[in-house]
Image 1 (cartoon, rainbow, N blue to C red):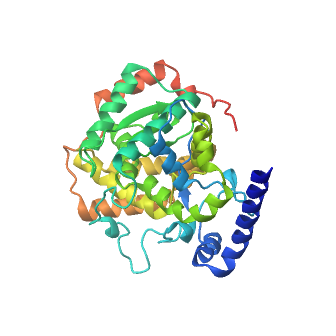
Image 2 (cartoon, rainbow, N blue to C red):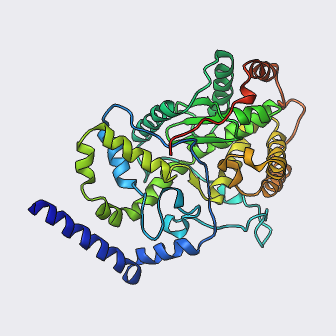
Image 3 (tube, rainbow, N blue to C red):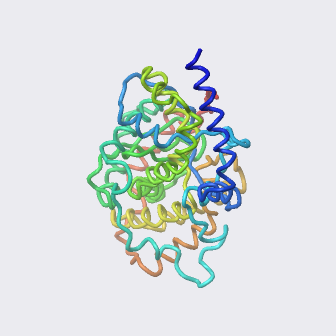
Length: 376
């Protein structure tokens, strides 16, 4: 009974501190500014994830450091704002639909000399372990395409792009999920997923390479890990609200799996600012070019997305619906190709392997996959 009273006292103190934070602290300023910042962008995972079966203390530590689902003033799970704004240290560089800033600078210039590492984030071994755990949970919730011809082709294409990325030493894994939406996303540690709806949409290998290159770029730039790190500034009061979190982790894998599900449901790993999406476009464009693909495949892919957004927006997963407008991405990419890349007839637009994959895709009827009912 005494322990329960102590717990209630701590909860009361936590709530009191939360009420005072917006009035007196710099963190409160960030908390307020979050709601004033413009809308951000995110990938959405295809389901709520459920626990798996092993215990990994290091991953539990990452989850503890980054746990964000809140129920304060309507902020929780599906109500998490698309733009975490200054509270997560994001920029609101250019307005929607604008290819260049007021000074007419190339928006990709800021990424040209960037270097990437795990320094100041989580160690790479922890990142890989986290990605493996999240993938195990996805496997429990989603139907993965297992046809050898399709999976082998996607792996080979993905590896070709990953080898020329700015993070070539990481082991990348590529998967296809049966889902009719035009969607793709990446998780930390090199786990990359595309939907059958996207495979149905692409008409050339260079278009598919542009999508995979973009997702590889999110892993290269550690966008998911950076979001986790930024989430730590919430840790002070989140830790107070989640009293007994460490004890819950000690209760076993089930509780840990629940925390992992909530972390993913909050979208921290896949919510990216528009600037991060521009960075992924920039890196992905140069990856596909170094892999000898015609970079104009990225432009034609954006044109498809623009057309789908007008004609059948329900087919677009949030990953594309909430990126910078396709019209802006087309202009940015065209400017980058004109100013910095040299086109030639040797660049790959399509291959026999791609056409064979598409034939097999149609034979399996994957273009007619119906959305599965998912637990909410």
